[in-house]
Image (cartoon, rainbow, N blue to C red; front, side, top):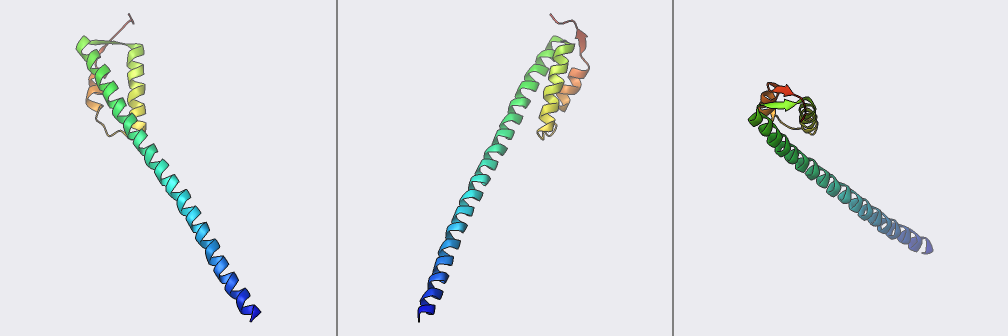
Length: 107
């Protein structure tokens, strides 16, 4: 009879312990999934900001009809960063127009 109580105690204890372990693991995985979602949102926000900034600066230089070498290098670096974030070519047209601009001394 004592062995029966011991066996029942072990069975109940181990299932209780396994439930605690499963709950802890689920909580840990949920936190990781949430932080991954926030990271994805930050990447998307950065892409939107890069699109806006490159488009604005590129349009300004195109309107002026010229660009300094330093500004062209900076704009190209921003465009490359956008592409590295997974940008899909929204800026290829404006960058091709910037490539054709006359390079001038920085003012």
